[in-house]
Length: 168
Image (cartoon, rainbow, N blue to C red; front, side):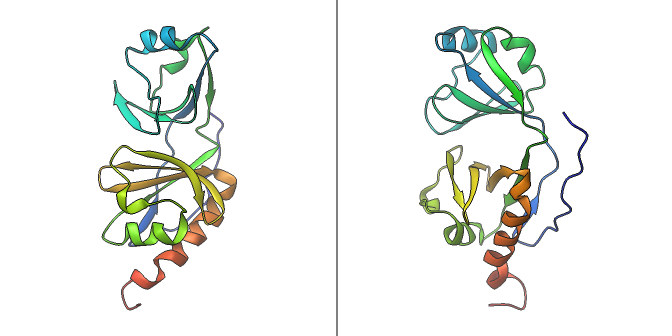
């Protein structure tokens, strides 16, 4: 991971930037998915969902591709059977929580967030910024490329305006 400084983006009552997390992209080689799953000891998601295994979070990221969060030994376990790239310094993560999270997201994303189930994952846009969207408990998590974090922060702040104390 590169030694980087994250943008200094303020939290609000409705959303907050999350601390840097260890994130890897994981892609199975053409015929190695069974060996990859055996090495990891789990069945990787084939559909847009999130699973937790051995302290790591696995997010579906397309066919035979996943994001792995907090999987610090992923490279050791997958050598020769998958491509692993450290994305920790390239992604910025926000959490939306509270009673207005769904209403805020409805302003930003072109998917049905009201029926978005726990552990569901979406690759979508939020105010024209490409994001990975998933749920962790009651929180909605948005991950975007770090270079777009300021634009997404601004969009989140605008979407939250009517829900802040003294507004509405």
